[in-house]
Length: 164
Image (cartoon, rainbow, N blue to C red; front, side, top):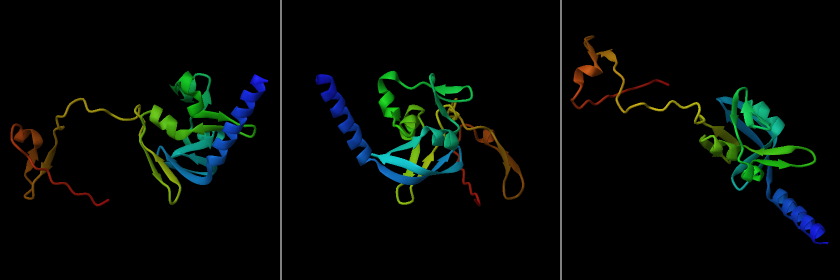
């Protein structure tokens, strides 16, 4: 009796979670590639997609050792599996924003047009080895070349401009 009561409560909780999930059409920009997702879910600011869409949008897939792409794998914490995966009869859902937090990946979301942008993961970013600017040489307006190292120890104001 106690087991069936617990099972019943669990089913009610899962049903209420699914009812609070907002079904939506979403666009995911991952590795600067855009993918349209026909059936995504948003729950409390978290983006849930099917594991099939995960592979299509990010080229990552869920494996026993974690979320992997080729040789790169991010192990999922065993104690927090429910934060990443939700198995349902029709599909297995994956929390892409929780994965982004695990991979230390920034996320930007435009709710009005349902676009999710995922920036560089921690394994993709180059960390500065020092705060020293690299040396470079550029001509002044008269064509005379100047190197940044010529001004070492002095204050320098760099003014840059780009057309893009």
